[in-house]
Length: 179
Length: 179
Image 1: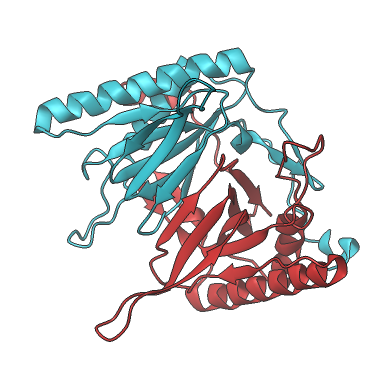
Image 2: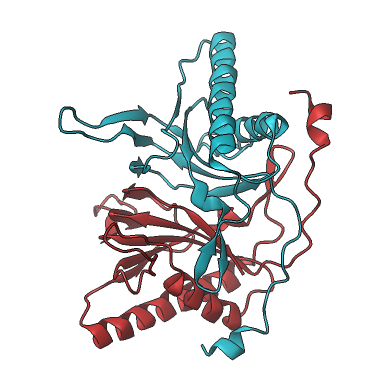
C-alpha cells in the first residue's frame, strides 16, 4: 500500500458547487441529546420512533432557496422500502418521524489524512439555515399529519452542541443527498 | 417551494469517477447483526467498543487498488478529536475498534424523488472487494495492535443481508470519504 502506488487512481478535484449535504439514515428509534447534564439538572433528549435521521450540513453559498429545496428533497425522497410494498416510499408516506441532526463534519474534505472545512458555511449563517430547515420540515410534516390524520413528529438538535446520538436500525440504508 | 423555483440552484451533473464511497461515524459502541434468527437459532451479532463505523459502498471501476487506497484513507484519516488532545487523530491512534458495514445504498443518486443505482458495482465483484477490504483493515489493525500492544478489533457484516445496526455515539461526527 505504498503512497506512490496509490496516486495513480487519484480522483480529479471536484469543482461543482455544493450548497448542502445530508446523510439520511433510517431508524426504528433514535435519541439525541439537546442539553447536556449540568450540576443542577440531568441531560435532556428528544426521541423519535420509526423514521429518518437527517445529518445536516450547509455549505458556502447556501441560501433560503437551498433550505426549501433540501426540505422538499429529504421529505419526498423515496428511501424506505417496506416489506409489504413493491415501491419505495418517502418518510411522508411511510409515515415516519424525522430527527434533524446538525453535522458540520459532513462538509469536511480529506487533504491527506486531515479534514479541511473550507467549504462550510459560517457558523451564524449556518445556524440560521439549520433553524429554518427544522421549521420548514416541521411545517411540512404537520401539514401532512393534518391531511392524512397522521401523528408524526419532527425534532431538531441543538446547533453547536456535541450531538450525543443513539440509533436502533433495521438497516440504516444510508443515503447521501447533495444539492 | 414550487418545483420551478427550485431549479435555478440546480447542481451540475457530477462527472468525476467515484470508485468507492464511505460514511465514517464515530461510536462509543455499535452492534451489527451478521445472521438473522431462524426457527432453530437466535440471531448472531458482532459488537465493537469505541471506534469507527464504516458504511461502505464500491462503485463501477473499483479494483484491488481502490481497496488498498480506501483502507489507508479510512484507518489514517484524523477524524477523532479526544478532549485531552489538541490534534485530531486516526482510529489507529485512538486506538479504536472498526465495524465495516456493507451499504450499497450509498451509491444511490436521486433522480427526482427516486434513487438510482447505476454507478454501483455488480454484486459479486462488490462482495469480493468488500471481503478484501475487511481483510486488509483487519490485518492493518492487527499489525498496529502488535506494534503498540493494543487490543483493537475489526468486524465486518454479512454482505447482502439487511444490516440490523444499533449505535451509541458521543457525537457521530459523520464524514464522507470518496475515492
